[in-house]
Length: 327
Image 1 (tube, rainbow, N blue to C red):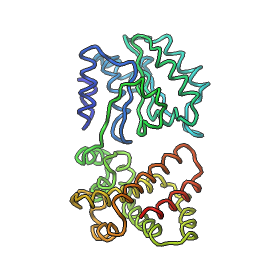
Image 2 (image 1 turned 120 degrees about the vertical axis):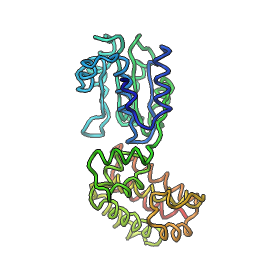
Image 3 (image 1 turned 180 degrees about the horizontal axis):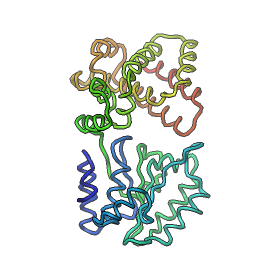
Image 4 (image 1 turned 45 degrees about the horizontal axis):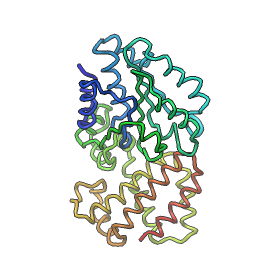
C-alpha cells in the first residue's frame, strides 16, 4: 500500500506528488506550504517512503524509525532561536548530499518548519542551503515545509516547486481527537476554535482549555476597546507570563477572523466562536470588518516575531496598542 494513501484531506497535494512519481518528474526541491498541524511533514515522509522503499516493509520500518540513510529529517533545534547553525549545515548535513544516494535509488532531505530553521534574519545557513539547491545532484531531493513561506529567502522559494496544503475538515479533526482519547465533550469546542489545525485542536482539547481561553480572548478584546495605556501595559505583562501564550494569541486571531466572516454573512454556526453568538454580534458592531482583518494580521506578525525569539514583553506591548488603534 502506498504511504501517501494514508494522508488525509490533502487530495490536491497527494495528487500532484503521485503524478510526479508516475511521470518520473520528481523535483529536486519542494516547498510544502500550509498551516501548522495539517500533515505537511508526514506527507513529506510518506512521499519519500513510497519512492525509497518501493513497498518493501523492512525498508518502510527503517524509514519510520528514522534509521534509513536515504530519508533524513532535520527539524529546527530545540534551543535558542531554533535556527540551524550554518556550521552544522556545512559540516554535518550538506556533505551527505554530496555522496547520496547511499542505499536506494533516491535520497530525501526533509526540513520541517524550514522558515524557523532558515530565517531571513540569519541568512548564512539559508545561503549555504541555496547553493546546494542551485546545483542539485541527480536523485537527491529536498523537501522544505513551512507555515510562513514568505519568511524564507525569495531565492530559496524560487528554487522549490510549491505544493499547497489546506486546513483539515472537521471530520478529520474529530478522528484525530478520538484516536487520542479526547473526551466527547471537549471535541466539538476544540474543533471549532482550531481553524482546521490538528496541533491547535489537540492543545485546546485539554480539560477546561476552551472555556479559559475564550474568557481570556474576550477580556483582551474588552481591554483594547476601552482601557487606558496603564491597563494595557499590565495586561501585556500578564500575557507574557503565560505558558500557553501562542495558543492564546492563535485563539484571539480566530476570534477576530470570526468577526470578519460574520460581517460577510457566514452563518454563525460555522464560526469558531459560534457558541458566543451574542458576543460576536454585539462586539462586531463596534469594529469595522477591515479593522478586524487588520487585527488578524497584527496578531500573526506578533506570533511570528516571538517565534523568532523577539522579546515577549515588547512584542505584546506593540500588539495591544496596535489592536487598540484599529477601529
